[in-house]
Length: 140
Image 1 (tube, helix red, strand yellow):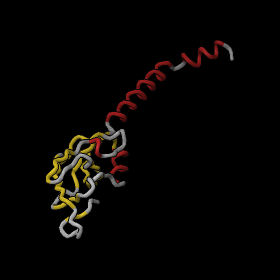
Image 2 (cartoon, rainbow, N blue to C red; image 1 turned 135 degrees about the horizontal axis):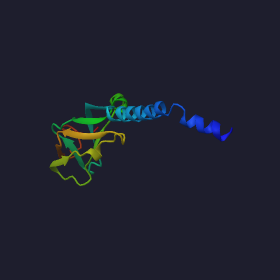
Image 3 (cartoon, one colour; image 1 turned 90 degrees about the horizontal axis):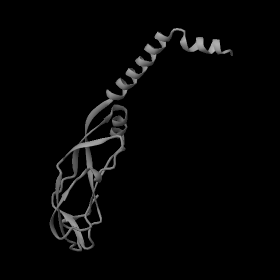
């Protein structure tokens, strides 16, 4: 191609080309800015590392409500697969133990943000295993 032909490819209809590029950039920003959504989901609680010789007793909160924000498409995927909040009882002792549910206890995609967890504080009662298993139950 000659330089005259290349020059005419770039400069012919320059106003239409500039308007098209500006429109494409605005559209890209609009799509990226408005794709957000919010959702409340119920997440079951799992307990791990229950100390040896102790069992969870009494009424314990079975799940927490989590408010999340992110892209609508990703939130739909999160809602369709089971999530879990895992509480570590490694340092728990006999009696009532107060555990705090923070966002790191819930595994979610990186594009999702947890804005609220309710309740944040869970009380777990641990008692010595009685050998019969009457009043005590194992965690899920």
